[in-house]
Amino acid sequence: MLNFNQFEKSYFNHLVLKIDNIKIPEGIFWIKGSNGSGKSTLLKAIAGILSFEGDIAISTIYLKNHGVSYRKLVNFAEAEPLYPEFLTGFEMVDLFAKAKGAVSDQEETLIAEMGMKPYIHNPLGSYSSGMLKKLSLVLAFLGKPKLILLDEPLNTIDVESLEILYRWINEKHQNEKISFLLSSHQPLDELKLPGLKQINIKDKKIILNF
Ligand SMILES: Nc1ncnc2c1ncn2[C@@H]1O[C@H](COP(=O)(O)OP(=O)(O)OP(=O)(O)O)[C@@H](O)[C@H]1O
Image (cartoon, rainbow, N blue to C red; front, top):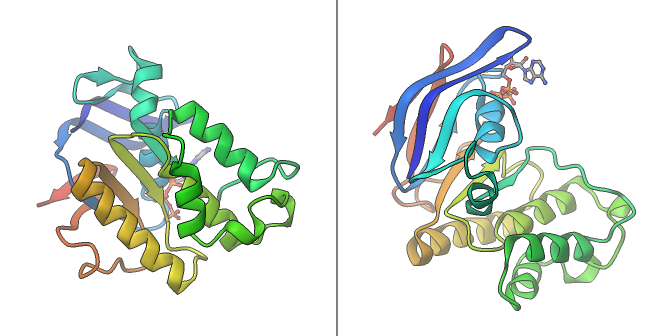
């Protein structure tokens, strides 16, 4: 599903990650690694928002040669999302829904299920960190991606929202064969994510534990 080809990422000549040739199959994966090991860097590179050496592909669609098609297949929720404070949550969802080609009732369903209806028309400057996190999760599920990247999805969301998130991940994986890469310092509930596999980042390399 996800292929790395001579991938290298450095910041100011300091190498952070080196992945020669690895294929990650379809599935739900928990990316583990100590602070500063490169989890967010990896997810941002796969999302196509960081420059790097080498290439990354979803099946045969390469990020560097088919940037627009590739980015339609990958959705990303950042660890600490930042959005323009003057827009409302609904305006952000609407913008992403159009960009990602979401079907018409998808936005309404995701907003309702995540319990965001009471404040979705309020400006984002008034949102708490948990409300922003929930918005970032809704945005990451819009459209028809092949891969969803969630950086620290458990941070700041409440127990009810976490249950919804686990359900969404399982449904998307089972019904639409969407794969997930989740980075989390907090333990993911392996009983609620059946088939969860682990990927470790250590010594600038990724190690597939399956
Ligand atoms: N914009 C940047 N400029 C320079 N160095 C950076 C930048 N972003 C990350 N780094 C460095 O790259 C390395 C990996 O950082 P990254 O944020 O990917 O780690 P992480 O595994 O997500 O960490 P954490 O668990 O603490 O969130 C660290 O050494 C960090 O200092």
